[in-house]
Length: 111
Length: 117
Image (cartoon, rainbow over all chains, first blue to last red; front, side, top):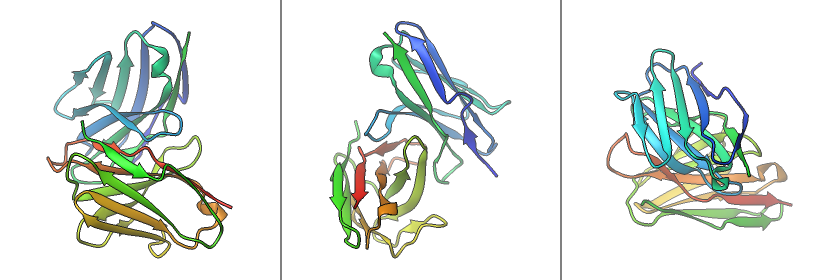
């Protein structure tokens, strides 16, 4: 079946360094992708999204890259801060179908 | 930005009782809201899609008579866990999408931690 998954379940990064979180998806019909950040005991918080007609989108300290050829999505966080420690989920959607979430990656920023 | 408010944030109830969780979109209208369940260290599992003015659409395996959903207005959806049991203990999260088209992000509430004793 179709699925969205993450390569790394946990990631530790030194404060100030850049981090990259990866996500693989298998639904070739997916045309909209989102990254969410979830802190402990809270709901997911929207970080950045990208449509399938783009391969890169930048926000404040974050960049999302989309490689449709290999069905790969990544989230780059620049100059990481302690507040970036959280679980990060990728999510994908095909047309008007429901949003499907990946399994999540826990990012820990080491002071 | 779009804000989704969920209430209560935590609730403890006894087995056999019912619990109602509210989800409100504070600064936008949402014809569609979504209810998720999340187990510890797991991803979000979609339970049902709440449609304003019509019946909710439940995912496979989710009991519609146990998890009652009402979407009475464009800004409010409620989830009632009926005859709760300890196995219903979980983190329930609602989300809503702004009405500006399919390619708009879901905004999530801060979740409700339900503990059934």
